[in-house]
Length: 339
Image (cartoon, rainbow, N blue to C red):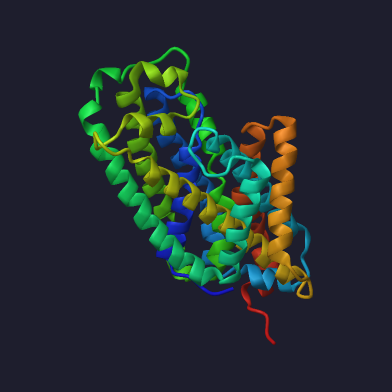
């Protein structure tokens, strides 16, 4: 796996967060904006053990070379599950967009094929593609702001009865599943710049606050009936009177989904490769596992809940904290395996 710069790591995680924001379906209100601040502060606190761990010189490659299988396999399972949830969110979101394909399996097959091709190019190429996707995201946000600014009504910023700060914070925290990906990615960037990788949390918070503010002040009373507020916002906020801008939002929505799924595929396939060097078609197995998980979640009617928060805390905080406590007894975890 190629090494990447901290800026590329920041971009990849920010794009993953942006996809989850587009798919947010919970009730929104002024409490959501405060809840987002609390949620991202909590995410920053959860990152402290992993940052301290890498500051001590920990590398995931050295850890896996010591024949430790359980924790890496748990991370693989986590990435596959989150990839399945991403497919499920794509299927639900496509019902509100004019995608040229609407069947879930066809959608999964096409997106999966693109992800496999992107994953086959390596992490460094993927990181460069993320920079291009980030440019598309900024351009699309510019179009959104251009169409929304005249419709902003500050009188809509008032407390709501069906929303709470705590509930909003917990829901947004449950969407912060990029933290376990950060733990793995830190092994492939400069450890001296590990703390700078937390920039993605600040940028993600800014993005959330902008979109939440626009949804609240532009949609107004329509917000309570919106199943997917972001998609309704894009429909209402059209910058041109003769030409709709839906195509831009459609491109970015699918592009962010591909970026997110590719990231999860690359990470799970790489961990499988470190554990089982002779295993072939690791990316294909990861994608198939994600599609299977999505189909199972769809049949069960899965929704984001407390289990998502538990998973994030476990993989982003508890496991790194346990590793920190054991580093003195296992100094070989700091060493890269020799050939």
